[in-house]
Length: 445
Image 1 (tube, rainbow, N blue to C red):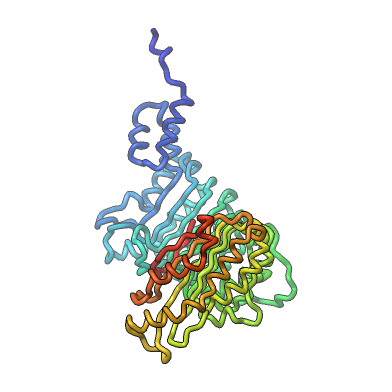
Image 2: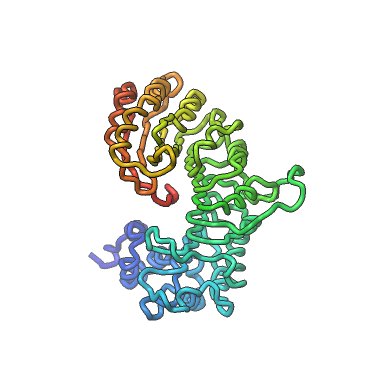
């Protein structure tokens, strides 16, 4: 049989090689096999690009922007293959004390990123990260104010000119300028993780609301921030200046350790009440928030599938039901959630004495026994087990989390108490109880 008659169809070759997406080493080898492997291998090799500092372990980093810019200069067609770009302030295991490694995004003489950005026409996802592969040690964020003019122009170009850019992740950044989003047009997913924002105030009369044309129709928004700077983004997001249209939002994760002006969050919910499917609300606030005369309500979110809430309170010798009483008052409103499938509760506790001082283990166990009857789990079980109100409910997840590394939390007693008073949920095999730890939260995406 002639050799030409044994040729494998090109479609089959491409299907096999596409299964190697993400395996850069194997794709590089495939690209050297034959001309028939080359094209599809190159497209997958350059589909996702990670740019890191120019110095890696004291040597020139092949993932640097200068190297990537040189590749595009030699092979301009490769720019069309790039769909996912990560720009990292620091790569793994590099020389920490080298100024070229730590300040490359602030270099006023380096225009390579801006020039490379202008060549990328098909970019769909952009991530800007202060730390890459360094776990939760956010010790070297990107300071947005210190970016060089060309670097800022590069990011502005990405938001304004990339017609296919729909996903933007910003990780470990300080002094982020919210006006960057005035020019965004096609974003569908926006994630802030460990971000602080620069000061921002609205110019003009906010009562005269004229939305910007061609605003991004966000479908997913994750705001995982810390400090009061998140107020600047909340003010921007709820102003007429915002570049986002929230009426199409399907997933909202809003986590902050200092939430103020919570009416702005209510305003966000007003805009997306008919489209929202997932809502995670985890502010580190004290119980006064839940006793506000104008409290946050959820009854209008009729299409919600997943609701995740964090309940924060301190337990002392006086007892008290804390936010659980607030939750019970809201469960009746949740009965409007005929589509709700998952209810997730994170219960954050800290044991303190009546005067605010720490308590010993024996006191904590005594108080636990006295306080249990206040916790109203039986009422929660009765309401959530109502199949007429919650016909689609499949899971009720409860996680007990000690605050500040508190080891006094009698987790076994808590779990036993819930099980003893949630018999209906247990019977339907819907109740899941676990113990967690308090860490800086990141986007559950």
